[in-house]
Length: 111
Length: 116
Image 1 (spheres, rainbow over the protein chains, first blue to last red):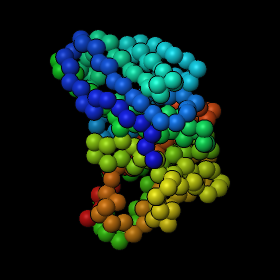
Image 2: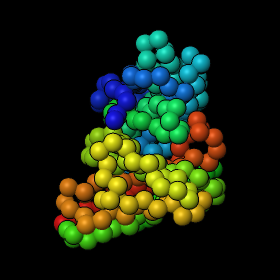
Image 3: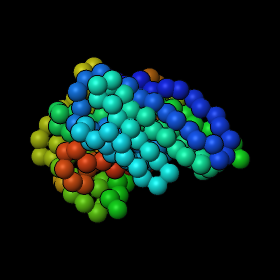
Image 4: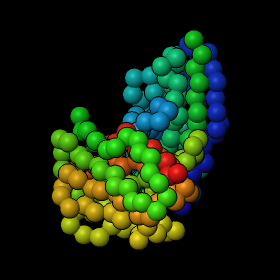
């Protein structure tokens, strides 16, 4: 069964603007991960945040995790047209390390 | 970095035939691989966890006799869609871990299956 909800489902911004995507989940987790998918392709791992961490940075990416609210956010700063893709959060479960994915946010960055 | 290769990338088959999809870890060994299914503009649905040398663990609602998974070596898992029907048309993606249970997954590029 699917774990999480993401919002917005779709986001359209101009190059240079920041993009914020949110993810909520339902059960306890070991970690939460964000992935990116270009149309018709596999997923690429972006960043992992453990359940005992609150914030993590990687380049132009900033991820927060609030386990009390069971939510996470992904911020992409100074967006570029090449950031256009679908972004998924995924929660690491205790059972065998499987990942359960959220519904995804389709980001469009216009040049 | 860890690379997962999935083949074929695209396949069209007739109803009633079977299709095999291969997932290989190219530069690491994967005792566990995961098979996902994705509908257009939708999330990834976990179908099953493929375990090297043992039976796959299927998610609730996934027919194990319909979607046969074999993980015969540490670098290869296969998914066979048996007696395919048009409703099986979908994007199938495999993934694997290079290290521990809580490390990121590495994904293949997916297989677009169209059943006519």
